[in-house]
Image (spheres, rainbow, N blue to C red):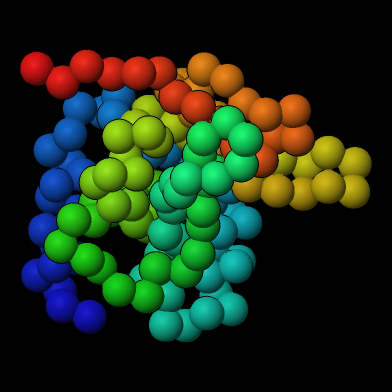
Length: 132
């Protein structure tokens, strides 16, 4: 891993308005820390979106094993969230939470950009933005 790439990704994220950051709840941070401890090569949790489902996009999460040139790193509670610039356009301002509902436990995005989601909860669409 190139330390200068990690530093650059941290600086790109820090330069954004706080309202554009991806944040974590304490419960999500604790769960992610436990999960990351099982993967020593992980640099953090990679979050993003991909085209998926009936509504348009789905969330993706995996171990971040590399830092790419277009990545940003958000650090909260000693947890690194790694996100590429393109995904950030749909995730800006989101909070990742760890939700326990009966026997179900999952990481869940609270995303202010979502305007619609499918009935099964697997995909979503976002607010259209115009670029000047």
